[in-house]
Image (tube, rainbow, N blue to C red; front, top):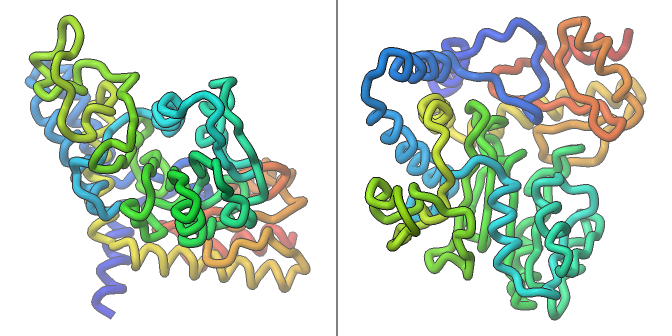
Length: 353
């Protein structure tokens, strides 16, 4: 009981949504502590005070994400987008290499491989990714949870199939980090944005690489990628960082000032507790849909529920104060810490009407 009360009291102290907000798969809500930190960071610039604390926030974010991912902080790079991280991985592949992807996965996971023009990009249904790894597959790239409908990839099967054929693995945790337990050490490369389930502002994304960097070249490296950044501002970087920081992009300082507090909250709540909370609400919604004669896209164990044929109702639901997404014609509901059973029931009542 004490754990439940702590979870609920933390959430109540941090979130005051003015709507029934079921759209975390698009954008997570900002905790109060994060909003306060963003305000303070802006004042530093406005008042001309030193920005030292903002650079400290970047390293605190790196360390916090590393704990959530289950890897040392030396393996975590701080960038701006998953697409940029994917681009670095794509640039490392030799011409003609085969990249295996899931059909209709999120563009940021796919497009950098396609625009190379000299890679063999093969797409198969998500459920067939593991069985489709074959000799000659260089990389398997997939989202842990699909953005469009919440389906969860069979990551253990994918990992074993890739190892059996000597392929590397790249997993995007953008729709999973924060509610689905994450083991980044099980894969060669992983990435995630921070503005969804991690409850942070826009502008930061993390990349986890192997200790030996997995053959990646820091093609986007600037001064922050130097072993001594402030000595790397002019001319070529003569000594790249000895850690994954060599893959950092120029830091979004305001973003990290807020994100540090968001990641603190995720750790305080605990991913296991968040997972139990989110999935229980999603299951409540699935059960309610069954009583309405509606069948969602099968995505057992996911915090995201996508209902075919109802996407067109998104505008009317928004007018009624229920924020939800229309994705690929499906009505996509995403449940997170600030949601309650009452939110689920309100959505079901609205769909009934």
